[in-house]
Length: 413
Image (tube, rainbow, N blue to C red; front, side, top):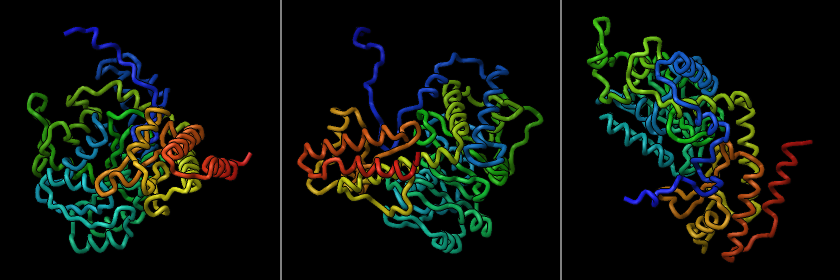
């Protein structure tokens, strides 16, 4: 092996305006460059406690068990599902995009009895549709996606918690794509578990998943308690229900690691924790509501510009996420060619979509550190230039003017 063939990593400069990941906030990257410390160093456990407190603010909850699962956002999803779902449990999944199907996939691997309701991609569910399905199926858990980036839709959750309480159903949502850029009220909406990811509105890199668990969810998980050999003592007692069929994703053991017992489970990903802590600190420093308003401001500016360019948007705009917009690829335009030129000639990444929308829709994100006016204006200018180069006619400058007009209206001097 010739080591000269492996130079230092020096990635190209990119403006990431797709559905995630996005450019991490430089302050997060600086935090992540800090030197490592031992996992039981008092400074480290203090940082862990700070992370729990900060994410209670981000999730809008008083839940004691608000912590990190080491791994991508999917690790947080899987940890909650494998810890909460007992083999044979009925679960209900309202599917309105690719990530509802993911919840079904993971639940099936937990050996759940999976039931679904579906609406066409681009729509969301009304509360009575969910309640009717709960009455019919009588599931133990309702598994939802709040913001599905495959369709750019935001599922309303505010009324579902009360429905779940009426029928004694545990209520989970995947907020990977939505947390920090759209309202999410864990306690007020009666959510029992929420998981998220760092690489979207939270403004960091993928690699750790914040989660929060209600007392009800904690109790359900504790009933499956199993402390592994080698660290268990005579004082430890197993739960009275079937054990959790994952060691790494056993949230009972993860809680014991994050709690005062500091029972060894894994070695916390120190660098990722430093980044996650800085993400939450920055969100709360800005003010959660201010950050959500910022995502809406720039998401709406992008929408106005896209519409002025003569492009059609995808889905029900009343229920779009603040931070991602679906754009229908015009007839006769090669969507992949547009993305290629955007990347190669302007250094800007926008996304395509999955499944039935693949090749039919672009997904353009304005989230986290990239929810900024300069990012929106640069992306609109580049997209119009590429489309004009490929002989798609626009009214020159109309997109930029529409975005400027929006900013002037919404941010009065």
